[in-house]
Amino acid sequence: MPKLVKLYIQQVLIGFGLSAIFTAILIYFNVANLQRLVFGSSDGLLGLFLIFFFNGLVFAGVQFAIRIMRMGYEDDDDDDDHRGTPLRDSDMIPVRISTR
Image 1: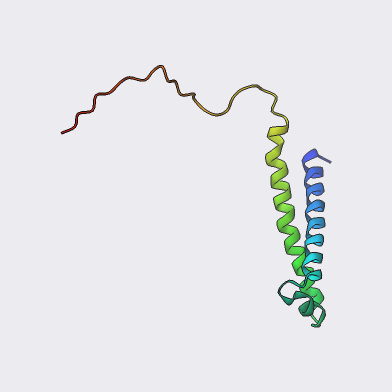
Image 2: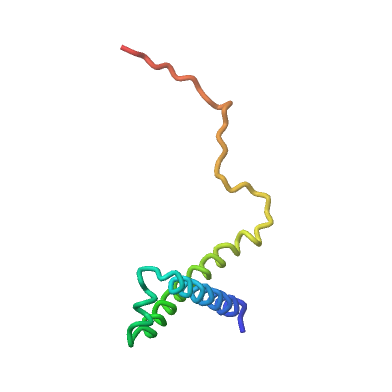
């Protein structure tokens, strides 16, 4: 299996784990009276699953994006300063400004 696929599966599992924790916190602290809605309705477990699933998709996507964007910084071993062209104070030319 390619390294990128392994990395993606790992990040998806982490994202859905975070989603499970987030959903449990939502239910435990009864945010927006969600606990009563989930456990007091016949379709509450479907709603709970959908909250878990869609948050899992978002968290997995963000987790994978952060990991991919950080890959360049981990392997960056050059000593170049990537801040652009430096400003030089010695090249300044005086300019005469006339006032009326």
